[in-house]
Length: 537
Image (cartoon, rainbow, N blue to C red; front, side, top):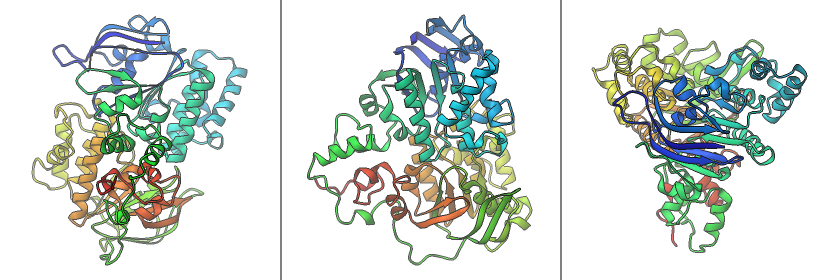
């Protein structure tokens, strides 16, 4: 179905190739998972399948890419639209209409699908993606996760034979992600659709992969079964990290498989003190004074109540995770704490109400990295963005660049931020917002688009800020990241707080928000692989 034959792609003469003499084949009806570090070339590989590279992005392609027998050198993306469906990393960038139902129908209109058939497909797709209740909603009023599901639905409705997905679950809560991936795997197994999927949160999808492509970042592409490729790659989801720690030859691809392997080794028993170790401790005693104090906080958008009378006290030197399904009110709560949306009720941040302060004072009091972080980038080069961050924060020259270096993200400072990958742009925005060294740091889905290594570095940065008495609040669907960094977890539902407590207790008692290691070793109460060294075998 998809063949790469000695393919080399570079974006400018003399520059190192992104893909270098790459050859592999993806069979009809396979689900192929593409993995690699941020900037390793995953998006380039995906874009080459439907001809976006080089017809749209530019660059030089040698070798041959064929899709369903069509050579992409002679078939532009529009010529492949009946065969290949494409969902980019940022779904909003691809929207062309105003309402959900219209967006789903738009692609079919361009392909000349008959109105009767179009109506039927719209209904089927709304049901498959579980978004029938959103059909009349404006796209701009949807949460990030809801927008992602609409983007996938708009492509599926055209019924392509090949579906290309770039980070499809990055903005989805665990339940919604499972629903989307369940729909995709059903299309693979029951309809025969070929799916090529790039995903950083491999724990969500690796169990469904027929084949894995690993891009080490040097232009190579290594192809093979996921259980073998994961053990070679620098990309290590929790179950692969467990396999390395315990000396297994291949990586388990599901919690069930890992539990069976653990059960086959009777000596693999967590010690009694497992619950007291790790990066997300139980302890809540001797809490310092509040950095954020909230009482009866309400956020409304017209008739919709996004935050419903919330009461919350957040401490300096602590990391609190805000979790919950898409649309639960997490982002609205963070924006309210930053004083960036209209709210009622009592709110103090370091004894001041950010709603009454000018932006310069708010920046030093509380900084927010929004879910769509690139919205904060507006200058023509990375260097200009970093310099402006130093200037606006009254920081020493090079402060923002130093923070970017701590994230271990190598960027060409002369590059336009719009040409960066999603993960690279997020890292740049993190550096910009952290330059002010705020007392309270709010991160809305900060791991979206980040690989495991970058998430580990972000976790170390979060730890450094809490060690300096910064209050960090993270709204996220990434349960694995929460297990590593958060001492406290708050679950929200329909604008209310439905659970609040130590991360170990909240997450291990939840079937939905429990990390994989907790599930593998249930009921031992472990959260991460880092808690395993004391295990007796």
